[in-house]
Length: 331
Image 1 (cartoon, rainbow, N blue to C red):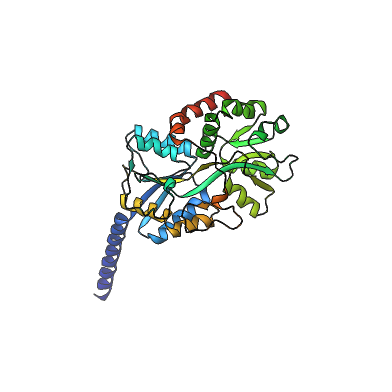
Image 2 (tube, rainbow, N blue to C red):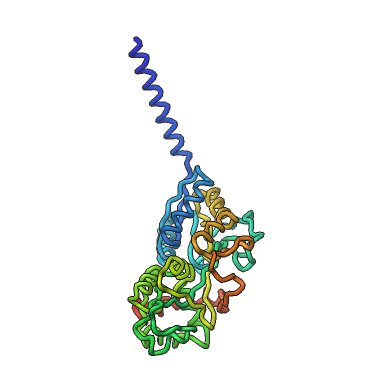
């Protein structure tokens, strides 16, 4: 009888445990994030968020902004958009979604310490940092470019690498900014790609590897990759071109089709909070939050020269610019 009682207790405990496990799994929240962050940063960001929100499991799809947008558009066309939250390089991509009424406003978000230009006035997306693009060169290189136009000099032929605007959102902004300026235009882009035989590669990480290894001497690259690599002893230098840097804010946004809006809002709140911004600084980014200091050795945000960019104009031309780039250079 004692054995039967023990067996019954064990069975009851096992059944209770199974029910509890089933209830926990059913009640756990899943947040689907599509992001262009580097793998390591995305893992650190979601881990820090999960520590603050232990009931939320984050599933990540990571790729370049252009590829993320292509995937999302295909899902929308199929009637089944997967992500709750987007964390991508540039606001142009999110403006396109906002125009189609696909973003969820988050009016309760605390933007008190964000500059007005860092977030959408309707609070459908929020900049999480400042990421600029400039020139990187290998310290063993013979020449020291000081401006964007230096890269068009024939002495740089065959030595330049850049991220493809067909993959990188920051690169797409840079190309469209050049194309829109009368002092650059498509003539400048062609002088780089055809005249100087610049190579377009799949993302900023590939640019850094190429320049740091000496495969190419010069590149167009986002600031944090160059500055982080330099601090770790990589033989690279980052140049703020005389004409100025191009810039993106890596904004975060919630889709209206989100299946978990509460967790999505919590994720946005975390990223723009002082804690989330300190995490970004620890990863080597310039913060958007006024009360958070930039990484050691970085220039102050106020000292940066940013090229004027007409976001409304870029929104109207960026897709055509990417197509022209692909048709002209096949990269």
